[in-house]
Amino acid sequence: MIFDHQMLIGGEWVDGSTGERLPSINPFDQEVWATIPQASEGDVERALSSARRAFEHGWRDTKGLRRAELMMALADLLDDNADRMARLETTDNGKVIRETGNQMRFAARNYRFFAGYADKLYGEVIPLDNTDLFDYTLREPLGVVVLVIAWNSPMQLLANKLAPALAAGNTVVIKPSEHASVTALELGRLAEEAGFPEGVINVVTGDGRVGDLLTKSPGMDRISLTGGPQTGRIIAGNASHNLVPVTLELGGKSPNIVFEDADLERAVSGAVAGIFGAAGQTCIAGSRLLVQRSVYGNVVKEVATRARKIRLGDPLDPETEMGPVANEAQYERILALIDAGKEEGAEVVAGGEPAHGGDLDKGFFVSPTVFSEVDNRMTVAQEEIFGPVLSVIPFEDEDQAVEIANSTRFGLASGVWTRDLSRAHRFARSINAGTVWVNTYRSAAAQAPFGGVKQSGYGRERGWHALQEYTRVKNVMVDLSQSTSDPFSIRS
Ligand code: TXE
Image 1 (cartoon, helix red, strand yellow):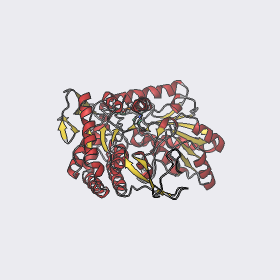
Image 2 (image 1 turned 90 degrees about the horizontal axis):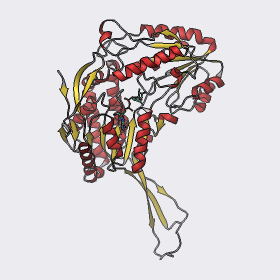
Image 3 (image 1 turned 180 degrees about the horizontal axis):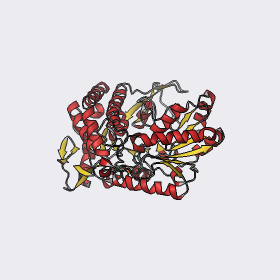
Image 4 (image 1 turned 120 degrees about the horizontal axis):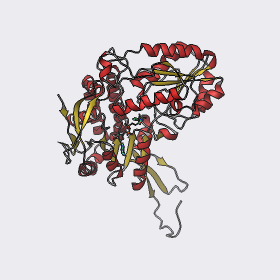
């Protein structure tokens, strides 16, 4: 059975005016399981003007407490529907059910965290030199925000953006990835059920052309994207036309660094989880494993052994540890980059090919792959593969580890495994990345800010910092004196 989905525009569920539909392919069996509308320019404009109307005529002036109640209701519904939503997302993008279930609950936690801020967004009183002048700031919403998201973790990526945007009093138009739109549409239904007024949350679907129309339109006030670096460049260009701010959460080539003094058992588990969790399709994947020479051989051997034992299969089966990669383009690209690694002389110690046998023959499965003796200049150490491919690079000492870690055009995440406290903090300062994990990897919290440097993007999601992206500061200056001022001089 194929499900034909509609878009949510101004409180109505619509097919869109093109009549064109895109197939949603289940990466486990390559079957079309759903279709989504390809929005037209008219649909995009209608979504933006609905969001504008909802902002101007209600949402902007809705009490913070009310916004918080609605967000809490949405979080409850997301929790109640977590298993169903997880099944939908797993069917759409192939991510294993044991992870998508947790992601739904984590998304709910994020709505709750930001709901807590909705009635606490106050400004400050600023003491001036001239005590006749009373100065204060207001923290205000921006207006209509466009949220463009990727396919790898739609509900989690969306919560990072939607929760602070709503808490701050903005209205939104969401554009999920054409490869995995179903849960974003379902979230629209949950938001209706929670009681959000029509037009506050709009969801339009389609490919990059729809994202392009949305991000070029003069009808919006901010853009937030999670996607690839090339899309980031295009969207930053679009934002420049209308001079609107943009948050970019892009790719990474994150170093996970193991020192000889680390708890090696934990470090190996962290390395395996850091790259093979979500089949490597996360922006924070620890895709470069830097290992100190003295323990290099043992760590490579252990990581390769663990990689070979990973249980591949139906992502809907709770026993499955790694599912297929999300779509055909991903599959082809990952295999091409594995070939590049072999051609450039990296040594395959696990995987290195498509995974076959039984159910695996139907889907886009890649064997968990470990390359050893990788030079940091090789393609597999520099390109974001976005797949289950680990490059293990040796280093001699701390200085060399830092130099290799920072020799990348990306800067999203990093990890260090050591028992030396001073080294851990030195490393945290030296590394050029938005996140540093010490003796852990892929840990996340609603309170902790997240984002990149260099070509991993800019802006921060989660934590208090995210609210600053969705609000602006207005300054108010009041003359308390009774005197008439000199019109030709500035009062200060
Ligand atoms: O992402 P895209 P893709 C990386 C990863 C992956 C590569 C490509 O390396 O292999 O990017 O993935 C919309 N104007 N990441 O092609 O295209 C698109 O419709 C406006 C890292 O799937 O960037 C989708 O909704 N919008 C990343 C969203 O952008 C456009 C997660 C992201 O799609 C557009 C995903 C345009 N011109 C991929 N073109 C991460 N940071 O986690 C596309 N889009």
